[in-house]
Length: 163
Image (cartoon, rainbow, N blue to C red):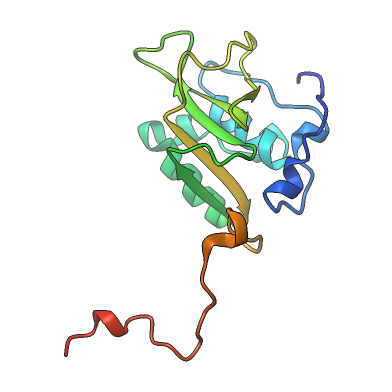
């Protein structure tokens, strides 16, 4: 485990009802390919042992396995190509082999805030994907959730019905 850093307040920023690992020790990589596992444990504030080794279990489908695990845990996993502006997991080229490998780090507001690899080198280029994990009961990201008020009497499938 690495030393703790100052809490950036990300728990509240993304609606977490737990304290993230920024408030305590962060999880360092223990094998060459467990950066995703470490980032998930660090971001949601659970011990390393409480998160599966997605790459070992699912190989190239590790991110899909993470999506299903989050669902099972009562968490929402969202990914996007745009920086959400709050602490998240960023996937990008690995500094150890940028042409062949990707690496996961904790990212916030335009930069790496935690790299689980012992080198702390971050990414070798711009992230290709950002992943946000939040509890299901938390508000969706974005100002005002970008969601119009619901009309409970409206039929959401009205437009899809044939005449």
